Length: 152
Image 1 (tube, rainbow, N blue to C red):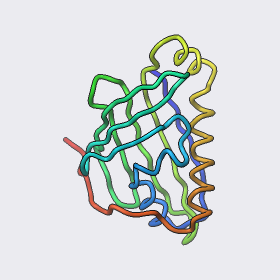
Image 2 (image 1 turned 60 degrees about the vertical axis):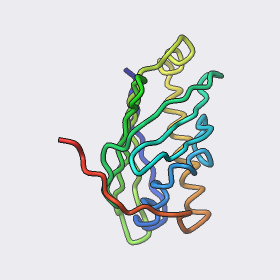
Image 3 (image 1 turned 90 degrees about the vertical axis):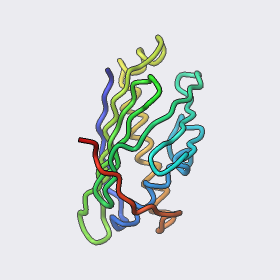
Image 4 (image 1 turned 45 degrees about the vertical axis):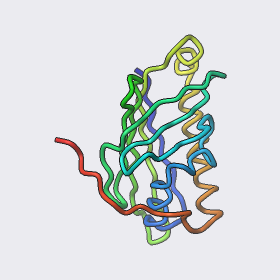
């Protein structure tokens, strides 16, 4: 299993950062390799990604969502993919975003990429693009403030 954890500080209030992160369908605007995300309902998402030249689709479920604290998800269709994003208020206009992803690389290209740290590079780049995106806008494109309690 491959795993990566990365953080970035953004100069935007925590509510704005969190609100933007709940707008899953905007992820392709700042996440490399994410071609499309369709939000099916409050908990279910359909992802279309391109990794190593291979296009894959999978469904994921939001497993926990607490405003201005965390959003967690996992795949629900046989792929091994899970993650959590946490939000930490550093100041009134500064927020730390931490992303942790775990997945099972498929095929030789993904396994080789994980072995040489390409996944770390990808997540760092995605966070840099998110920082540019949200700081450049100064406001979120939308918000969903509902909660998804963690299953016991």
